[in-house]
Structures are given as C-alpha cells and as structure tokens.
Length: 504
Image (cartoon, rainbow, N blue to C red; front, side, top):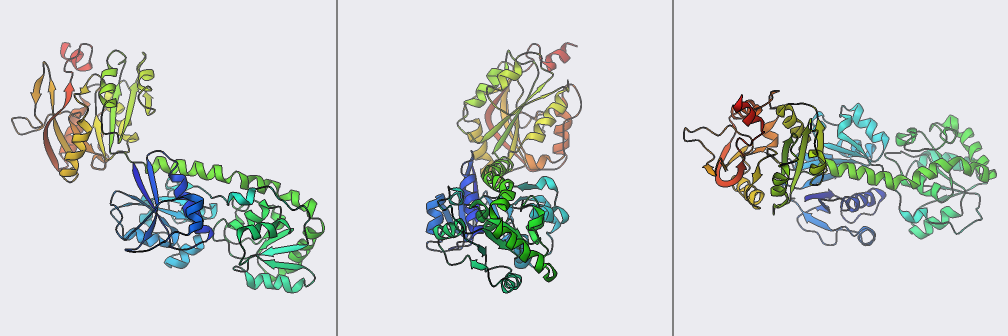
C-alpha cells in the first residue's frame, strides 16, 4: 500500500482547492493507494472546509514531517517545497502556470525537475513544461472536471439578455466593453451560493472572460454547461483549442482595437441566442467527458507511483510441468506487498496460461536465452528490491518475504541481502562460502533496484548470473548476510539447462 499526501492550503475554498480534493478522492479509488489531504503545519484545528468534507470525504493529516515513505503531491505554487522534503518521492500538480511564475519567481522549471512526475490540468501547462525541457514521459495530463451540480438538468427555459462575467479577473478590459454597451445588462458572478450561480447562469445567454487563463478555468465550462454561449480572449490556456474548445470566432485578442468587433459579437449572441447556442454543442460534450478523462489520468498516475516492496522475477521456458510449485510458494506468502513478473521465453507449451493464473504481469519474448529474459524483468520491475526465482525452484515457507522485509529494515536497507538456501538432497548452504566469497547465484539475494542501475545479465544461454554477479559485487556495495533458510535450489533437475550443459 502506498501512502499519498496531497498538499493543500488550509481553510480555503476555490476551484483549485476543490480540484486537489477531487484528486485525493480519485486516488483513493485506485488499488494499493491510500491518499490523504495534507496540511503542512505542526498544529491546526479544522483545516478542511466542511463543504469538501461532505462532497469528497477525504481524510486529512496535519504535520510538518510526513512519513519518509509517503509520496507527496504539491500544487505548482508550492513547487519549491520539494527541496525541503528531499527524502520523499514528490509530484507536482500543475493547476496554473501563471500562479507558478508568480509564487516561485521562476519563468521555467529547473532541470532537476525532470526526475519527478508532473500532472497537468491544462495543455497550456503541458506545453510550458515541455518548452522548459521536461521529458514528455514525465508528464501525465489529467485535466479536471466541474462540479456535477452544473451538469444537472436545467429548470429555466426563458433567458434574458444578460451577459455574465467574473469580476475577479480582467476587469480593466471588461469595463471597457461594459462602458461601450450601456443598454446591455452585465452581471458579475460574485458572493453567490452555488445554487444561486446555477440559477443565474440558467437565465442568462452569455458569459464573457477577458482575464488571464492561468489554467483551464472552470467558470466558462460551468456557464456553457448551463446553456450560456462563451466569448473569451486568447490569453494563457484560452489560446489552446484543447483547453477552451470553442469556435475561433468567439475568441478575441485582448486589444482595444478589437472592442468594436467584441461588442458586435455580444449583440449577435443576444439577438440570435438559439442559433449561436448550437455552436457550443461540441464544447459541452467535451465538458461532460472530462470526469472520465480525469479518472483515466489518475489511473495512469497510480500505475506510475505504486512501488511495491518486492519485485519477484521468474524467467520461464516450457515450464508447465513444474512452474506451479514455484508460483504456489509465492502465492502462499503472508507478506503481500510484492509484484510478480513472469517472462516467458520462447514457450511452446502452456507455461504462459499457467502464469496468467497468478499474475497479469506476464511478458512473452523470443530470446532463447535466460540473460536477456531476466533483463526484461528488471526493466518492468518497480519494487524497492528485486528477487529472482528460477521456474523449477521454490521458497520453502510462507514467511520468506516477511523475514526479508524485517531484515532489510533492521539493516537500514542494504544494497544486497544474501540469504541461505538448500539444494541436492537438502544440503544447507549459508550466505557466504567457506572461502569468504558469495555464492554466484541471483536467487539467494535481494537486490536493491536502484543499486542495480544499468547492470544487466549477459547475452548467454546459461549461467548469465555469473556476469551479473560480478558486475554487482565490483561496485563495492553494502552487502548484508542473513543466515536464514529461504530457498530451495532444484539443482540439476532433469531437463534443466544446467543439467543439459553438465551432460554435454
């Protein structure tokens, strides 16, 4: 289970704050993730607005020292806090490009941010990150969605010649429009309850927005969903068709020379509302699809942040007659925080179908070589530690992972943990050889994934673990011995590659 803390300003109610609660709620719908709102303080009473508690039911935590194993998600205004919590895995959620620049004083993101994941609420933000040098693979577009209340059926059929606007943004330009049209009713959306806002939108014909668009703003979408036509400028996210998906004829550069054309467009909408309304059908349809799109983005995020304790890799070749014993020894483990990766190499029997009974992480390759097959498993692994198992071996009891996890934590997370095994008529093999070296085997060790780095198995048919073993131990990593019996090595099983090589 991965703990995720979504950092959030306390006692605030804005569209951006609500989006952070939506993010937390959707993360909790994913397997293996426990998400909480996180208020960064030592002591704080009632930090979460009651409205969000009722709507999303997110648990929260108040702390200045989050757990070191927790994944931290920061809104872009707090991007610099990543430097304060260096021991945690961090993610930035980009709700606003403009607010990032304002709060951080930066016009681009630092190069070191390429190592972390970025969630983007707008294509404007995605484009900003790419232009700043962030790898597109590190960017997950989620978008967001408006409150479902704005998508409910409309109760009002008669509309008045009312033009709505947000008085908190772009007022210098909006006031110029209002002064040129004294015969038109302009109404600000402010100091109203959600019910009152919906009622006002239902009785109006047009919403205009000539302010900044630091992200994909909610009010244009809310107004459109209630049947209003929309006119905007081309600032920020509004210049991106994927963010503000309205016809170009309803977008204007925020320039005083365009005021006559803007006023003419407003009058056209008010006079021919029913005709103009249909121009926004595609926009409304995309708005209704946003929640599904957001959920898909969160699913993609969950796959990236889930980091199991162990990744168990089994290279398999025509193993239908013996692989079940290996898989059952894994399935019986009491400790469940692991992923099982099976790489079927050139199998012509039922190995793959048997493997899929135990895990959905089954990959097929045509290497005819166990080295590259193991390498494929390493590339897919996400665990803190990697454990290898041959398809004809097995773990000897159900507490193997429990004991390994305990020992790794007790020894402060070493690079390699060597444990005991048995083989050939139950001969006992301790972690270290009498000569002082270590058994050249991959399956009696837990390998720290980050310590493996670019080390890989050789492209040889058998005994590829010799090269890998030498690569790893030449790094002078911290090795810990654990004289506890874990593994049965089915030495010289008839038909195994080792047995065939011996006969040759």
